[in-house]
Length: 414
Ligand SMILES: C[S@@+](CC[C@H](N)C(=O)[O-])C[C@H]1O[C@@H](n2cnc3c(N)ncnc32)[C@H](O)[C@@H]1O
Image 1 (tube, rainbow, N blue to C red):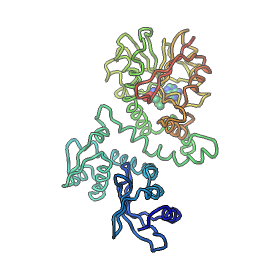
Image 2 (image 1 turned 90 degrees about the vertical axis):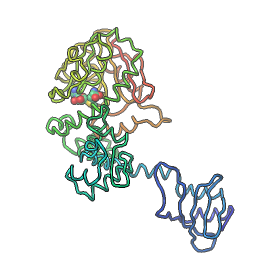
Image 3 (image 1 turned 180 degrees about the vertical axis):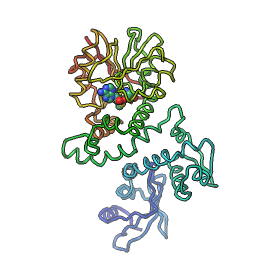
Image 4 (image 1 turned 135 degrees about the vertical axis):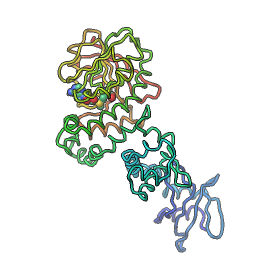
């Protein structure tokens, strides 16, 4: 076996072929087989495993512990390779997940069932559905036992429609036909400098498309409510030290089905509220949160346009609204609200806030989704403060939940 620096030099300049047994994923690679030239000899095959002090190299003839070899391995399969594999195949995972949700697999598993029974119940091909179930098992959404029986894991439970904090709707929207189709335009948009793949793909902006395509509208509204089940808690947590007694009437502009506003009303019984929304979103009364959260007497749903007439209130909240729009559109919304707001009234903007370059953050990815979806973007705190100024408001402060995943930016009509 070759040893030492000169051997290392040789190897580095060689081509390395990875064996089929290569393991990928989040786990550190425990062992791989590689084929390398050893000095001037033939190509030789080694199995290499991670040992306590370096890489344990196993050839047919001997075992050696050989720390220098780790340099070589780092050029073959490092944490970076493993991370990249996860990214490259990320869409496989989300599409497997989507198929499971759309076919009703999670909803049908109230108790453990055999693959053949699941297939029969859902009208699926037994062979292909077993393979899908197995893949869902590999994603740790289902648990497979030896007799081809499947049950839900805790994570899989979150994909049932009846789970109180289900994420099913987000899966349906994110991997569904429309949003899936947007991503293929990303490169072209970045090249041309013109965002909004929805218009490129479907010829109209998403909210107009939703009016004509009820299935998309349902998926969108359900996904927003799913997001809200988490974001509402974060918002309430962020604002737990805020003195709501200064407010008597809160208006949620673009409040969707009202999860956030109704949860705030439930927390602060002296408040009354108004949800301003597009007529089609609030037409189906059964989907609205006011009754479900038992605040119907204090919550009014108003069909309207945030670019038009804004209901009078002494504070306004907007969650995931400004990120839908360009700076000019945001300034119009904010100044529109400002025009009916009394002096000293408040506006709360709930958004993912883009942190500095040193910090990886979901907002930096969500920003790309917004680039695809419409005219919007995610913004830094300074950018939100500038928007507030442009809309006639004064920035006061930002409230965060412990996770820091969202921020609540407070402005005042000074
Ligand atoms: C990204 S969703 C956020 C919904 C809700 N605030 C939430 O966080 O779940 C944007 C919302 O703005 C509403 N919207 C869009 N354009 C609007 C307009 N011109 N007037 C009122 N609401 C509008 C949409 O119908 C949608 O419910």
